[in-house]
Image (cartoon, one colour):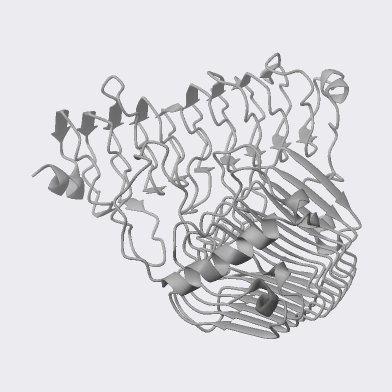
Length: 563
């Protein structure tokens, strides 16, 4: 097929498993200017690393089938030359596209502004009549970037399929930019797509009403401190929906930076776990995000909003409420010791506060009854310490997710009225949470009845000690809680003198105990004594399986793990 014929095509319909030759890496449909319809079947263009659809004035529809453009990036460690496999594109097809590429390369065209060396790029831009873009499952899996911009009548973008079950996995670690589309009304993205993106941008979309995302779409990567989300100038957006809406869905969970601006009609944010671990955020006229609990905001009842406020507090204070995002100016210099506030009864520290503080000490506070510390507090310091000791009226301790991440020790001791301890939440997908590398010591708590430790809290602990807790009835743990450190000295688990402990259970995920949880796995030294009432033990099968030094006696139903 000649380049002249290419330039006169009006419909291009490509069947299944076509154009799968290793030499065809750059695919530019823009040299078919009269094209009105582009339909690509399943498993086509396997080796393409860039796809351009730019400036096609008559194009109205783009539909791409399952697993097309699914090239995987070559592993640098692999040999450059591999044995050649059978090629599904015949010689005529090969010469056809080769001839087109040579023709295109001989011309000076405007598309090069989008293309960087070694980038895997999909670009759809400046197509004046394009109304729909639909992409099938598992396409563009290893691409770096997806740009959709300046298509004035584009109304529908559908990535993946709402009707076909399967793993979406489109653009798995790619950035997404959807901008300047005045007619776009709906955007849909299937599961496991854009799961680890450097950035996601929806901007200048005056007609967009709904963004729908399936499980683990646009979840970002909590291990990579780079992910950013921008939602800006979307004046008709009313709904952001993530399905399913449960605690196991990480959609929108881990962008580090968010910019939310001019979303005045946004009322429905049906997302279970948005924005769990922010570093920077901007929120202006953002509809329901203005008051959403995931977005740090000012707390009306706060009496501390700055470090100066903190330093000027009267020692007779009875209630201390620290505002969101407060007292973060002095990196690794603040040791917060509240022990001298003898009349303090209630302490509340809201999200993202004291992020660089080195320690929190509450010892001998005679009036203290309740401590609540929300998410992302005391988050950045390594080898810090948490002390709650000898507080005779203390009744309740609640700590959220991602607080005290890298503290070395957590000590909760000699608080005779303490009844409940709750640390972290139960979310399957998180890789770490509060006290992620911390050893725990809980002893001499006469009235403690319930202790709850969420997913991956204390997962890197060197020791976990529960001793002399005569009223404790229930311990609940989450995924990989108290896993213990790998490749370290044998970790210690000590559970002694818990005569009323009835239940030691793993929080179910979707109604079952996950067999792949590693709770209590790397704690190799076990000292387990005096738990005669223990009858409900539901732990994953790997619990205690790596133990080397075990001493146990009178431990009820826990004994079946050591038979």
